[in-house]
Image 1 (cartoon, rainbow, N blue to C red):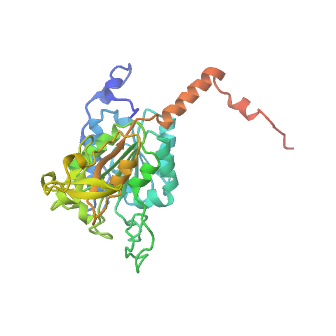
Image 2 (tube, rainbow, N blue to C red; image 1 turned 60 degrees about the vertical axis):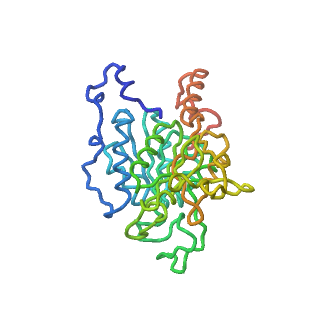
Image 3 (cartoon, rainbow, N blue to C red; image 1 turned 90 degrees about the vertical axis):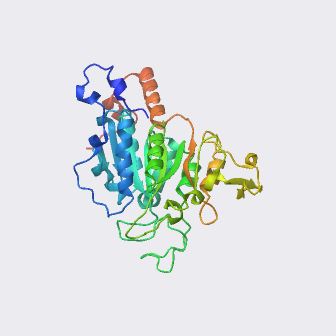
Length: 354
């Protein structure tokens, strides 16, 4: 993240003393009344964001939240930072402009499965492939909540909703696989129902240089209650979740008795206690792998056949779009000097209109 930190600001003359004080969660709590439905997972996400931001030691005025349209997109009103409530699906494009115009800012994109993966899909994919230094949080509840319960791009095949009374006949978009296909440099999945895991994931995403993409599984109590029921429940979580840890064998179940191995390149659940496989046969998670193949395999694990993988799938280093852009601008100015808009407009073929 290229934002100016409080430590850096302390060495800069003329910085106001209040900019150097240690920030707390209270500094990021907006006076706006939060208007989400009772029990919505958005409350959990907001609370953890407000806890993570002060730990980043970025100047308060350097945070910007950009959103599109949807329940999640009310977010900029509820966190006390600069914000931009954009139009449907265009939050990544707006945020790219904000970051490139002022690279000192810590820019966060808040979107949902409807906003980001329907009308906004192209903007999202191109932002990820460009590796703009943004933090993109995609709230996924598998439904259009703001418009009262139509199926969304991530709704399960056969899902019965107000707009698909006989069941949707579309295959769902899978956000993590999409981000990996776009060569995302930081791709992760967490869930609103686990505040500790959510906070750890958000913190790691914020510290990544380049695009960090985080899918957050959540519930819509009104129009899609029990979304991700096989994953969010605390009871049986050991069997329903795979918590990914870099450099460790991929295990789950009580005491880590089960694991994921491959047979003919297909993932398979094996039981270590019965001797079905040895620890050495298990896949070992590697977020730094140059190839996204293993990450894509893990992202494709879905209930009921497999538990859901949570955590960081990929975390690699690559130059960010905004840094490369600024480098080119600096090189051009060194070669050609400061630009002149008047000369530019009068260059080349011109004509007069009488």
